Image (cartoon, rainbow, N blue to C red; front, side, top):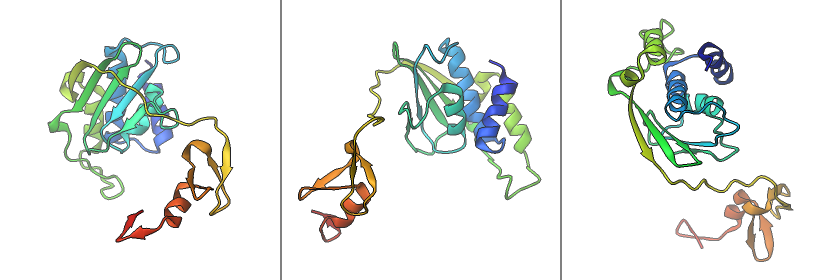
Length: 193
């Protein structure tokens, strides 16, 4: 892996370099190394991200795991943890950022002087993997969630916009998108009937 080039690609996609982006980037690099992945077009991966922050952008770039393809699962538990699964055999690696690297996470917009920002980012990018992450290898059987790609469209009876057939709701013989369906459904004590 050309780490300089791929890191720059992640920065360009995300918009700025930060320790959180570096965490997702480094977790991806280590997962590829541990799982012996050299060709992302031949070997399909999935990732469970236990957060919904900057590092997820790096995962999408580095592991070819994207929301649109449905092979990244966001479990927003607020933890800097990534589990990467090789789908062909279920071999997985879980990378959890070590506690001593978790704080502080300075915000460059709030603290432009970046108190510790660069040092923390550099440590995450360059220290030995075992000093950055608690690494656990495991075996996971994973069925990816359904992702609707090519389906017929219906016209929503509420707003008139197109909605994919798989996401449409039918009520009283009429087709609705999710927003209009919830707006049209009767409520009793705040609960939909």
